Image 1: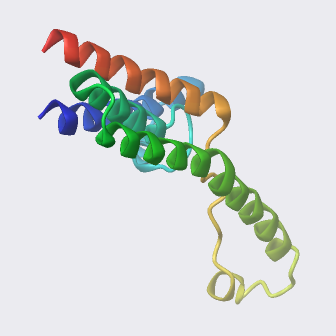
Image 2: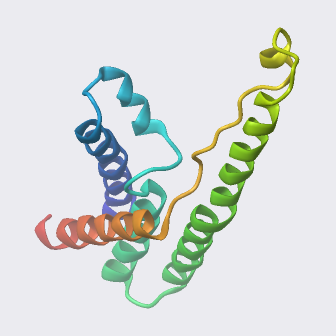
Length: 144
């Protein structure tokens, strides 16, 4: 049961932490709860969840085929968060700037929707998420 619960707890901690981290930098507002569901920001919920899964499988099963599968999933997820999704966010930012330069004011929102600009994670955000995942699984394994 720990293999299922601890990664979910790690992901939830990372996602909820985004709200508290962001609300310290700007005026507190309940609308910032949407950050809990975001695909970017500090820390990475993706890294927290996959590192937690890999860690708890290692602690419970040792070297196994399940660990190998979790490790590959973790690497793919983290690479995607840092690489591909981050680049998609940068492209969204550039496309939004280009669309703003168009002179079709009345049809702008209907024809060209605003693209998400914050999609991926920085290496630091992934590292903090990974630390959360590691700590949650380690503490969960030894304390419960």
